[in-house]
Image (cartoon, rainbow, N blue to C red; front, side, top):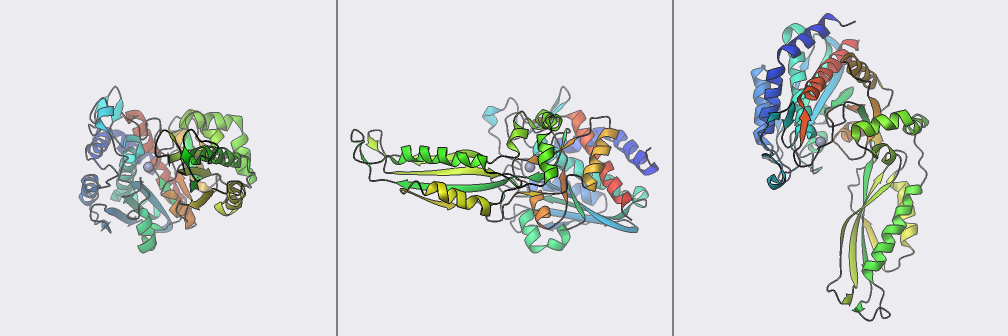
Length: 423
Ligand SMILES: [Zn+2]
């Protein structure tokens, strides 16, 4: 049974669908690729929308081209504090790989096109509109507590000028009782945690020799190959994740729905250390035995393993390669993080998606990294519901218009339900 507020919100969303899509199109037509990370074109549109609704948003720009925007309203009755978060920057786009301009904002056959459509201008538009709808005076009186809206820059490169800066310098503005993010998740899944990068650079040095004199020196490049194979055995390290998480990832029904939403193979990658050989450089000339090789290995740690636990295993494996030296090059702050998979916002989101006529989403761990980690590190439960990541960071990025309107309804109603429930 929907409350009067919920019905009013849904009616308003139904009456403004064309404007909602037009707002997303305008964001897509305002390029914000990172690098270089200049988000001012789209930030201006967000600021205009907030100011038109009577807000005086805070603009915090530690880097002049990378504004961060914060707005907040307090409902008349006390209650809990929900924070909404999205990022304004996008991956870059090579126009030659696209079949239309990456910044067209075209709607064709029910799909909205443009760099950032799923990561994450779709989610950002949705959170912005949800915030504004909830703020409307007549409706606001039925809510309790506070709603904060944050739109940040410098996310795609995990740079220092976005959410990280805000947490370091304006922490009190960022914290709340719960965080809702609109990063891609697919409507089949709700993201409640993240794996963590653990990057290792290895340099191998040998004497080197003429290419015909392989007996005279070890080959730095061949040794690099053996190092990578050795590091791949890390995948079998046991994890010590909470039982309810491990059980969830072993459930074939949940795994099937995760793969359906996030792509085949996603579920299997959740509990394992994965390894990507991100960069390799070595050898001077075709006919020389290489005397030096450097590799950069991108390991991703699952929930239940810390880098402190993995480090001695890397050291043990590397001890077999006296020609090699190694160092960690990932940021020390990174570690796997998660919120309660049975938490209140998880349940609200599941119920709200079901009420919108779709299959209830399943909880999933993000393989990559997002700003939501910063809230989890601060002890704030953080959940992600957003678009299908199928074309994320790819050419011809696009989302279904109907999915955008669905995510907008879910963000709006889930936020309302969280604030209505908080006594
Ligand atoms: Zn993103």
